Each structure stands twice: as C-alpha cells, then as structure tokens.
Length: 238
Image 1 (spheres, rainbow, N blue to C red):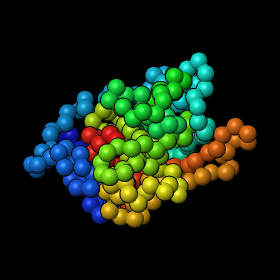
Image 2 (cartoon, rainbow, N blue to C red; image 1 turned 60 degrees about the horizontal axis):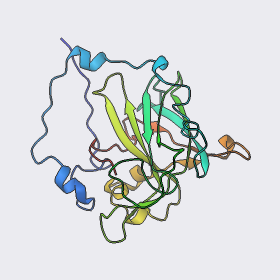
Image 3 (cartoon, rainbow, N blue to C red; image 1 turned 120 degrees about the horizontal axis):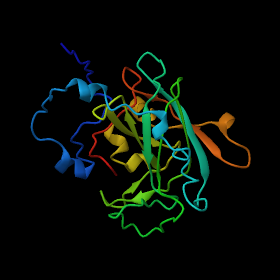
Image 4 (cartoon, rainbow, N blue to C red; image 1 turned 90 degrees about the vertical axis):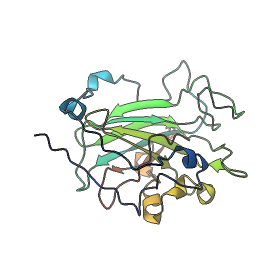
C-alpha cells in the first residue's frame, strides 16, 4: 500500500486563498471545500528531471539573446532547505520576471513600458548536491496593475519549485530589501505574519557581488516547518 506524506500549512503564515485586498483572488479562490485527489505511483515518482535537460545558459537571463538586456545586472543565489535545515538537491527551479522597465514579455501585458528585445525574463536551473542554486539576471522594475487606486507592484521575481514530479510544485515570489511599495501591495501583505513576509525578502550579499560586474542577493527557500517560505496558490500570477 502506498502511503503518501502530507503537510498542513500554518494558516498564520501562508496567505489565505481569498484575500479581499488582492481583488482577483475574490473571483479565483475556491468556493467549495477542497478535495484530495488520489495519486498513483507514477504521479509521485515521475517524471524526474535530469541535469541533461537544462541548457548551459538557462540560468543566465542576460545571455539568452544577441546582446545583453538593459538594467542592473545581478546575481541571485541561495539554497533550498527542508524543515530540518538539510539541503534539498535536484530541485528544478524556474523563475520569471518583468524587465527593467517593469514589463513582462506576455501578450496580455499592455503596460506601456518598452519591451527589451534582449530579455525574455524566464530561466531555470537544478539545485546541486548541497541544495545550491544560482541565477544571473537584471533587477526587475515596478509596474502598475490596477488592483486599486495608484497600485504598483514592488520589484519581485517569481519562483516555481518542482519536487520529483509535476504534482509536487510550489510557487512563491522573492522581493528586494527596503522596497517603498511593500506597504500598499496586497499580494505581499496577504501573508498575515510579519516574520513570514520577511522570509520572502532577499538579502544583499556583498561577498557574492562581482566587482565592476554585478550586485548579488541571497535568498534561501525553506520548504516547510516553522521557517517555511510562504507559498501561494498556482493561479496567482501577477
């Protein structure tokens, strides 16, 4: 008999599915009790990603086109850890973000900031044996999003983490220190616990900064437990 592990999220830390301040969640959140669908062995154990599926430049968002993108070049790195502080190797991490002007390369993004022909804004990598990951990218810009009067999203990068199967996916966002837009962003503030919100903010890492080339930030992702990184519903994509 296959016995699957289950983990209950701390409702005091993770955002509720219905966050009235985040207007689109009012329509998106489920209105009926969630059902736990049975999983088979295949859904739990595969497909498993291998390092051979990742291209050499997939984790460098500044080298995927003919020229470098416009913006502040930076390194984002950290570790994926479990509740005991142990590294989680072989985790597929995908990121997506706006360009330096705050615009996504997406057909429904009509914010009149210029598109950057040298920046797609997506990348991926797999954690090494010590749970380390590393991306090279540019700092995303803030952008308006019409959630409320004069609403602007803080600069952020979306992170998606896959376990050993597509059914094991967690999505969250990484923010930057001292952003002046934190106080009016209902997505950031949908995390009810102040300590939980702080765990979504990366730290400037002077030691990892490369002189005359790139700033560096560190952001460790904890999958569960008292220090878990708050994760969001898969439909939240702003």
